[in-house]
Length: 444
Picture (cartoon, rainbow, N blue to C red):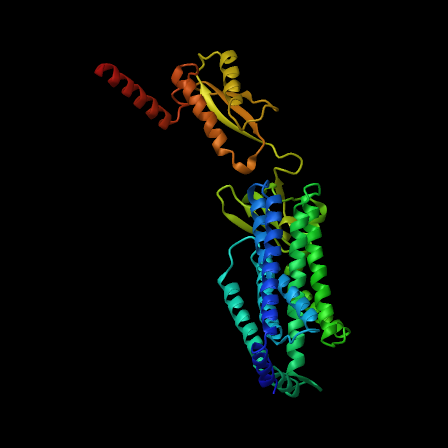
């Protein structure tokens, strides 16, 4: 039996001096593989040391993750080379046992890397992924243990001789498992390649953001389709069967999936027309905010309060969309006040324009301006308007800063507001401030 032969040969090698050469070769391969992976890791980390922000942090994490995959792969390659060279001069039974162990280690690390790159690129690793990783690692180590114990050929024979009736044909369990494994592996590779290509495309700042998104989506779709078709050919299925599936899919789209199909088509139309881009400030129906993500089926809108809204793409095509970033990202904001008829407008208007220009986020061009809206019963109603170049950060803070500066001018007496034009809270604040000053004067 293979188990007794493998173990007996290994025990025989342990009694001979040549086993020291095998042990030394294994130790040397481990040190070289680990050292080379660490050297490459440190080299790329030094190149990325100048990159700050989220992009630099993500790239450094990617280098760290790939280094953990590269180390067992390098060790495995060096062990295979050592076994090939030493087979001419020594027994290699110790290497024959060591290779499956490092092969399983490399497979587990590679699978973990692909899983996290595909399903947990921009966030923490979920419990489902961690559970799957544990189950996958257990299955891999179990397969290696069965191989070393010599039970693997018996299991293969059992899987090949166990037939399952599928229609008019009978398929063995081995073929089913092989087909499922090939589909999973090819799909994972396609998703990983699509994610890597999307990350690279999204980093090309010279290309329009909509064009980057659509190229990334189409590339991922093409890779997935190629992976599925190739896996079907590996399974031995006739691709003409897909015509039946295509007909069923067409019926499904016609009966109940037209909304989903419409959203997908609308997503590609939005990206091709470039009517919306990531970072645009838009208002749709009762929702408004900044576009943070454009997917094939939906668009994510983040409001100024941090709440995210998922909008179907069809909603952006069939209804009106108010965009603050289509031709220009600047928006106008304003505040109103009523000054007494005894005020000199030639003094008040330049004063208001000057204090608005001193607010950090207000644009110099177009310059802030004051308009006289009407002659109210209690004074001149003025509107101080100004432009903001970053509406994604909100306009309320800027308006508040302008009102605070106006309030300081009111306190100093440079601007005189009418009693009817004052907000009660402003009157209360003025009275409280006056009372405080008077009490301090009496105390002194």
